[in-house]
Length: 256
Image (cartoon, rainbow, N blue to C red; front, side, top):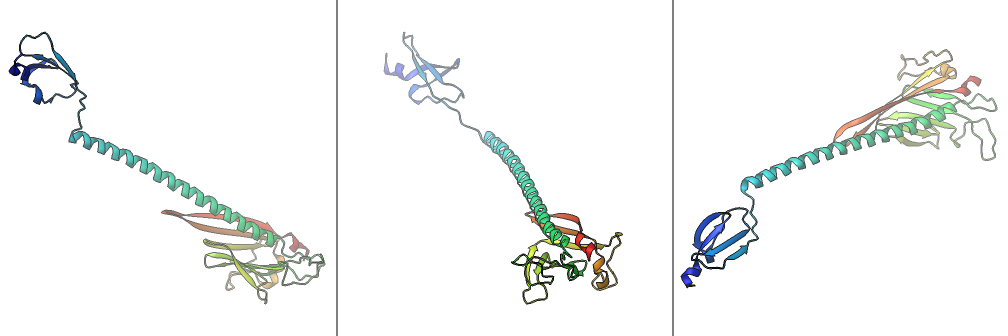
């Protein structure tokens, strides 16, 4: 076989005849992975070359892939945002509800004890009953387990609850040297007390400043309605507002 015959061959690619230089053969047909070459003259041998050919992506295909990926990422982000928002809202609402229950439970317990006076001294009951403030007294046993009949600066015998700014403040022994204020719950929008007698009549005199139960009617209080509204921030979402109302019967006041 001559050199010219070896260099120039008759190539068959995917059923099509292409004439060219074997050493500089360029495949432009996508998907071809087998090349069979026969010499131009009638020789008994032929050479089969297996090509590991992989086609690349065109610009249009790349743009389509990027576009689809962006759509998928946007959908995932939206789902994540909604889920995160719902989790934050539910968590804040649960915390607000729990804080309200704890605060109103403590206040109800102390108000229910108002007027506790085992030795009938008539020194205990409501000292002040306003719309946003209440001060109550109740006798408690001392270290020896004895009720002494006096309002002491100890044993939680005088407790005040008052709405100040955005907090409910609990003050022990108000008006004495042992006065000790402390915030009970924050982020409060409203605290309101209503006082009723045995016949469910409203005892507040709205002509007084601030509106409150007159001193002479303090002994007639039998029921106190407590209403608290809390508003907790919820991240980028709207604040969560919750209101809790509880009615407390002052059973000890019936004996004063």
